[in-house]
Image (cartoon, rainbow, N blue to C red; front, top):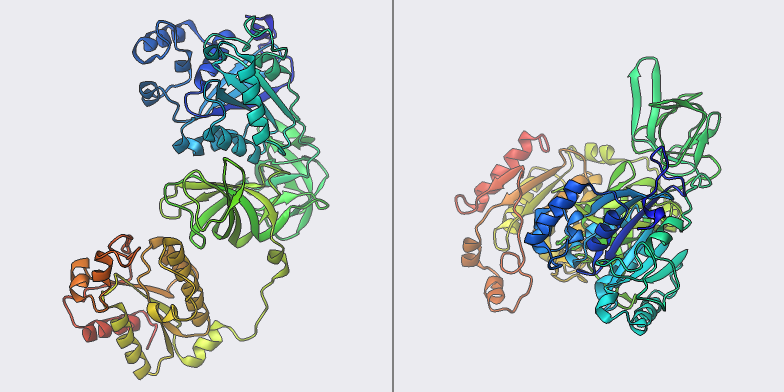
Length: 628
């Protein structure tokens, strides 16, 4: 073990280049956990009782014969030890005389790519492991692409298990050339290739005598000396507001972690959304007031003049403001088994701001083998696409390349709250800043008052053949007889015009409902009672339609007819065709229907006639004061 690997200063703090965050990544079983375990062992940061425990665990779960399996120092989950793989991201801390380190051990299996992206999002350097026997694999390329996409500026190509190819210099050179051809055009600040054996320590801490043909640094020496640009003070000042700090009547400040640049007492700042400006009066921290603060510090700012700002707003310097728009283009890494479909609503969280968002268009999908751009209508698990994203409200952002904190976001499923995607903003869309709402003197209230009714959407949902169109038609006739102003949007009729270009894939079904929901919203704004009769099989799209209008204006009517009864009726012969395989993606057969969980009305067409059910619906509208 070298002196630099073990020594620390008397105060216990490394006296060198500060903190380096790095991750190990690559394909499965390339030796990522073993490499980190060896680093921890050689730098003497592992206690003896931990070594004893790993020695015992090696007898049960180890893969190194009689030797201690150092990978078990990192693979802490029982499932990881039993399967011999890494599942979750494991973070470890260690230090040498020259630097402190936080290392993320990320999983190599394709299904855990989302975990790798999580580890890469805060890393300065990536150690990309390649098994010398297998060479550069698809997952190696995927991890390399994600690393550069997430702004990692330094990469080490660690050709591991070089002992298993007899320390062959030609094999090492072949792998290095293969990787460099793949990554041609990427602008890493540093890119170093090192042949090593994580199991035996070759070129890990000190140069190996078994690779006399390699004259570069061992891995630890490179990690200790690589120059990481840690000064973010030169960036424009950004402070996403986390909360309004008001412990008593005499104090009000805005709290958050500085995401870029630095701020001093007396500096002018503005709220991005409103443009309202003021001057910093105090910089308050848990350890007392500061004269200045910079990126990474958690602070509370007070001001010479109070400003209207709250969680989700961004404070910035007046002469270098972020973009502020409701549409942008971004790379998206999809992390969920359910595909991403354009038009489907998600929650988007960027910094401290959360808004509803949809991917309006997938411009292309990236083939991680060739980096070519492929046409795509959806993104599946672990796929990466370049997308246009549309938001329900504008947010402040920077390009990800300029600021990883204000340029990154996650997508969240609105029903399960699961994180389903991560994104890196490239640029705002110009049309987002060129298009503005035109003020109109005649509004929805004026139009509905003229008609003497409350506008609303009656959304009929259910399986094909459930009776939606029949009942909706009867309800409209009764409302018309009562002098009400209505319009009926029927699923089949709309596909003859507005949606004639759409098929019945899941992506097209989502777009079908999105267009109809936006049309229904316009009818509501016109003061009409609009009846929508669509299968609309997915809860997320029905919720999207509900969110387009005001509370109380969306009445979901679940026409609850069993599939057996719908099959028996089969008025258009569609079920028979679907059973014969003549119709694909038919709801209830080979495409799912998600029944409403909290519909305003549920009607059973097997217990009453359509006429009785239509009357019941009109009575419910009167009870809700939609009609008099």
